[in-house]
Length: 250
Length: 312
Image (cartoon, rainbow over all chains, first blue to last red; front, side, top):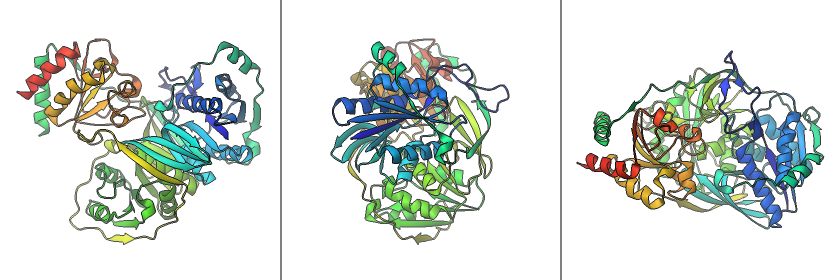
């Protein structure tokens, strides 16, 4: 079986972002960039499938600027076999990314496409489902467990009421949730080896895909801050305040 | 100008957030049609027909919709949606799973998790775990959107029931089937629409302490139980209780956070709460600083005392 993993390069999850001074965009200048944490989980899952002999090849792809090579090398260092960068210097929205991934999926013909359930920058959670629709494949989103048997996968999905286990026929798109696994840290020798790896580059313009953004961001603002709260002196005061608030609701 | 609202249900009842979803639809001009798609779900269609602002209910009923799987639903929704200006779904596991699939089939961009509607083209939505709000313009011919229902006013009942119009079913794709649904905790009220929520973090220390301390406190208010990712990862409670960027987004009247330091990803899920109460031993915890009412102390002593006082 062949697995394709799609990853995105985002502002590191530990950093706080702010709007630009003109309030028109998010200020990401000079911030540390990392692999989207959910995509890291997808990479780890692909590597585990490779190690378990379920997959015989794992390929990673990123869509974006040349800078994305760093996160692709991280994936290689974690144990992915091969990396592809679809080079686009303009920002891409989920619909365009899904189209680009479709082009690559048709060339690579994977049995399974894995990616994170959402990116922590735009929090859109769209690309996996869009790609599945474009390919006419089934989808299993928010996966917390994946078991592949032959040309089928049983996937535990984290849904609002608990867990839902679905069986999808392969090929399929599966999006990773937090509890699917805990990604490894790449060893230093693997990091060094990944530095020298050749990353195939495909210009996005050459794919014939419409890359133009369909959504225009008009403004970005910080959320309104809550008024300063109060520190209560005792449990008794808290009980009284809670009873007041509770009575006000009745 | 008209809006199609895809409602979430269990083939018996509408999801409680449906009124707020229709509240969002009412912010858009024109007629509002509701699509009820499922199996043996006529009572859901009848319930939807009684809600304020609904022009008509379109009802699709077939056995291959019984599990509400996106692959089959999207075929019908995409076919129907092309005739509408906007298509709204709830920003829940159900809506988030389905909406992008529909959008891709219509070849349009989707707007996720909207919290504000300015007009037919301008929408407000949170990004970066809710730390920023962006205003986006969508000029797509069909605006497919998921709605954060807690951000909108629920509609009421209608005096006259809207007509229910059956619509023929689409094909069964046969590529996916539901094997099992595991509902983890049915003893507490549903988190999504609870007026009071009692939430615990890793500060509770164990699953035993989590339930021993929080269940009686929650019972004082008939409150739902919530948890941080860390508490869910430690198996204190099931994933259905997780609140935050990747869990549920809640907006209760009272949110009582016990032993939660307040990671940005958790706070992202509770920004809509009206009164935030935090109990934590760390005076510098982000949630203690954010809370409207903060009590610094050992939760193992404070919570039983508080519960006892409230029970009186």
